[in-house]
Length: 344
Length: 270
Image 1 (spheres, rainbow over the protein chains, first blue to last red):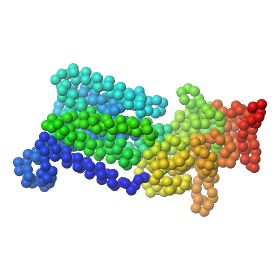
Image 2: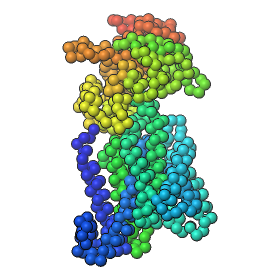
Image 3: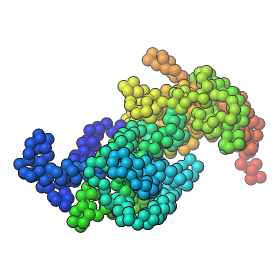
Image 4: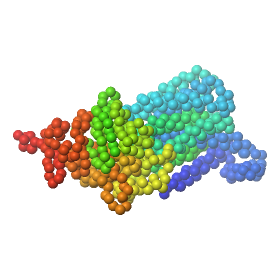
């Protein structure tokens, strides 16, 4: 069972994540040199003033802005990639990405509806948007799978076509709603492209409960997803309660996606690219694929965000644009590859 | 061991399987034969619990399996499907380990005992040396043995096989049927004294393998079990000719019962 590789995969992705996290904290409108960053972190841990940061400016930038921003991105990246991996396992389809199959847009519609109803900027108030996004996402999954299903299978083309159609429909509704509320349009538009993230620690606290449930649950469903790779009938004959496993997977993956969308807008392709690379390198055992994808997704989003903040600095590009620029060509490559050889 | 009492099953309102009953003792191979569409696959699906029964009941060792939750049922009955439908990215050992699913919890953690069962199943099917290979690196015959090994890992007393020989060449067909026969009739050696014989129901198209490897034959026509008995009793030219709607003759040769088209070529052309 590829036992000989058990340690290295986690080690590799954690090292990458650590590097991405350092970069994410260091880079921005005010760049912090790495030696200063190290000095500030070490001193803060020892609760001493830092020699290279006499006024504590860097420390304030790090703790008030960069750190919560980094943690938010990590959770969102983990959620997108983890749920992407889970959808791919559930639909037995390498192109099932929460963005491509329309779940992100459905969640976005739910979130926009909730945003138009004013909520206070507190963790409790901020938790309403993800709930509405979750509802939007769940409804979308069912519409898309219903449209795409042929007998007992969900063919790739159908899934993507249904995803695109439903996604266009919900996006149109979302745009309509945003135009209705003129004042909010620009902010919401940027949000929708995965642009302006909410800052500070409050959003992080609002996001956390969903992520604990969603990501924690996804890590635990690897075994039933493995068995489901044989098809629903064989999975049932191997003792899996297929209906229950499907439901749990859909709810957990959609919860994670919806929470991510609610706090950072629609960021595509992370859920496609990361699980795919993990699968190519370390195989399709979902017990490992999902947690590795989460760590990888966190890294990818952090790095994309660094690019987004620096490429035309001082202006920031929405991070969703960066992931799309990276992910869309990747998507086409997978599409061509999966036609050429039916390796799935 | 297996009691099937007048089961009917099908899709929508149309019953495909009609009022089928049969009783099997432990340690026997039943070959199910019949023309395409006669209900053999529906029978396998109904007995394995994935197709709900419209009426009747299936009991294994006295337990009503159709009303069991999937996990409990999968400890009583396992299914060996046709090769070709294995996810290519898993290794042989991973596939066999999935057979332990009915004995594992939600997390699928493999215990030392589970690992023993997996190794034993791989060994029985001569797959130990291929355990690290991924499925797409295996031949058709090896894949079919892999499915059988997965079923063995389930440790279920009843094994259902749905046309396992269809995509195999003659060498692999015979090899597989020998293994199936041995599962139902384990050799009595000192270290296998506790090996419990499996009961096997296997659907087949090749009628000539039957007399060598099956204890009983069931002939199905239009969803009904029209004949059940020893190979020599069921493989009769009039019964088969009628079932397959084709003149067939039955040849008895050195203890084998063979079936061939009834008309000689010159009769057809003449």
